[in-house]
Image 1 (cartoon, helix red, strand yellow):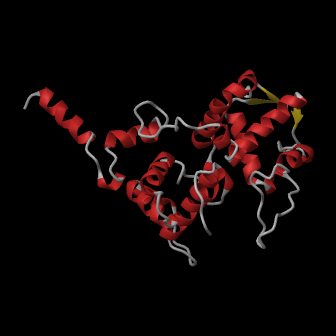
Image 2 (tube, one colour):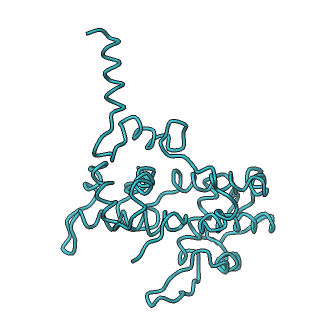
Image 3 (cartoon, one colour):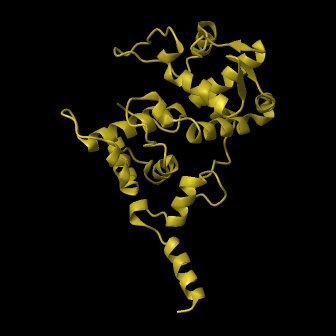
Length: 257
């Protein structure tokens, strides 16, 4: 067999749909994992994202309003622990983009940034995106942040925040599960699954099973406990990180507890 024939065979194999990947090929999965927003990735931002859509993306709205506060105040001093001062925190929280729900269904009172995971995540995300900078525990907006706050750059601001949250912010930062990027590694595959199956109502376990089939090594990060199995712990972790936070915070899904 000639080398050209071998090369052609490899190309064909790498572009063959794989059942475990729900129809994606090895090449498509590779791009989805390691160049999620690249030209060759099967995942792309919709072209019809308008201001009305952006207005209904809670996490983006928190990040946007926070940038406006930093720009207005020129500089924001953080607490000794590196958190937002209450005045800034309350001003941001009062927009009610992502409220903190108490166990009885009401709104919990927040006393510090740790009480509001969405707000803390948004603040860290804009830092990771290079939209604000931290110097001596004081935050100020960057030239990039000022530019993207211009009305004509609003869509690019959203893309910047979304990419920073999914690729730079660590989903595991918010919970006590494994530090491994369960749910975050391959977040693009979950979005692909939603595009493929999202027209009908499914449980999070439906998506968790398909994610685990594509990335079976994730089960190894969970141990047997008296109250739960590795499989159930994985599904719980995947649901909280992916559905309850990432997808819901960005207004991508509606889910029922």
